[in-house]
Length: 269
Ligand SMILES: [Zn+2]
Image: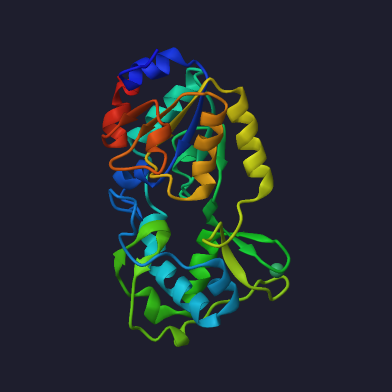
C-alpha cells in the first residue's frame, strides 16, 4: 500500500536503513556541491589521481583547506541530525550511512553510523597509514604558512575554500612525521574507492532493514546510489527527502521535496 507522508512511511517500516548526503548539513552552514538538477554548482572537487600525482594540486588543496577548515571545523549539528538521532534512540533506525565527511551525525549523538566517504577531522599518511587529528595538522599548517593563515575566503563544500590565482607554489606542506610520506585528508576523493568493509557493513544492514530512507542526497554518486538500487532489487520501499531531482527518482515509493530539517521536524515534536 503506497504511503503518502513521511510520518506514515516511517510508521509502516519499523527498521529503517538511512542514507544521508550534503542536504543534511546545509543548515549547519556547509554548502553542497550540486544544484536542483544534480549538476555541479562549482568546479568539481579534486581527484585522487591529481592529489597523489601532483605536488601543485596538493599545495592548492591544503592552502584552500587551511582557510576553509576554520569555518568547517566549527559547524554544529542542526535539526536534521537531531531528528535522525531521535529516530535511532527510539529504536527505529538500523544503520545510518552518510556520504558526509563532517562528523555531525556523531556530534548529534548518533551511534550506528558508517562514514562512507571518511572523516575530514582526520589526516592519513598514504605511506604508513598513520592517522593524525586534523586540528593538530591545521595548527602545523598555520605555523608553516603564516601569510596564508591570515587570508579569508568564501567557504566551499567539505572544508574547501574559494581561493584562486594565488601563488600556491609558496605553500609548505609538512610530510608524515613518522615516514615522510604524503598526508591526505582521511576522506574518499573522487576517483578513489570506498573501503570494501564499509560497503559490506552497509549492505548487511540494508538486508536486515524493512525500508530505506534517503535524506538530502541527489544520489548522483554511485557509492550512494548503489544502496537504493540494492533496496529496489530486494523489493524494499525507498523514500527520499531532497530539494530537487535525484538519480533514483523512478525507484522511489515516496519523494518529499522539502528541506531536510522541515521534512523531519515532526520527529522532534
Ligand atoms: Zn607515514
